[in-house]
Image (cartoon, rainbow, N blue to C red):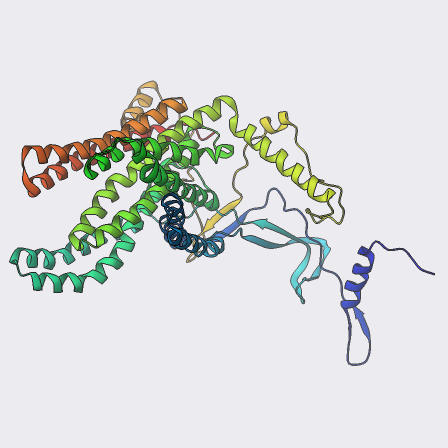
Length: 540
């Protein structure tokens, strides 16, 4: 007599047969099946070893691949299509495809298989494992298995470990500059050529660290000052979005804006107008759009500033690579000066302008619940996608049926009322094994003594001068564009002014350096004040 089967019972019978073993005497034993995967407990605490420089190497590889993809890949494709050069389009397509598998490999989602044995008098001492063998515990335990995503917190090194190498780069670059400058002063062109060639490889290698270390240093600095615990994969996604925003900005600056200019302008005038008008408007708008991609996680101005600052650093990272590599061909003096000016000027400026835009977006999210509304849209889309796929016969959730999404389906009101969950990941020191704080997040004992109004005023004075940006998106975007335009526009104007006055190459250079120094000092004071203001805001 035949028995109908849906296939699952047959597979289960086959699995059971495969777990039957026979010993030397011919006795047969049925091995116990491993416990099934379950959902992770909500109160579980996980820890990972602190390896802060792993983030640096991963982002260094990412930006180099992204640079190839954008500058030599997609931009070549666009240029080839515009100018009708098939060979350029083909070369761009090849350069676009090469980095993709490596980028996917670097940032593929990481799943962790957790096995949890909990003391339980009604449990067992042996627990079979799916790969074979078993886990033996000295006392009776209950056993659980579950798979979770790697949501470990962002782990960045202490500030001395990132700013120290940056200072060392500048010192080493200065040492390499001395022989080149001496040979230049001597007027011996043959000697100058030999010194340049001998120093070129060290300068090129040094430039790789020079473009990336200061960005990483500002990343660590901003994380420490803002003081919000952050998931590593979230922070890396923000920075990658900043890198990606460089592509549309490049298209506007290189292809679209020149079409709007009147014909007959000199190259220098066209470049000056691009720097003063196109770059501030296009770059700040596209960086803000990159921040908007993470609206579902931006619940307040403080979070918005953090996301915006990191997106700005991502943009600065890929832009810095182009500037530093270009300056490396000018020798050690050019590379060292560019690294210094961009390391303490342009890089934090990009972060600050986009951070201000993100601050305004955070206020919008806080006053309209835009983050929770976006989560609702994403959640509904995900549920509908699972329902649609299972109706087609694909068991997406792996529950053995095709009934669609079987988990909790929150209503819109429940989604609005839901608070963000904190991270259940901790960092442990790989040497001592003790728990350490995430960057900028300190665990302190809180006292209960009363503070008088006079003491409170003194504490407020000691906190230093602070500034908070505007409380709306367009106002903050206007500040970002205005600050960026003032920075670029005045730099171009000072150089033009020096030429008109007839200062000569040396005079124009000194005038530029003096004005850049003023801009950097003002920027750092402004950044410090805004950081103080943002840090004083509540985290929720």
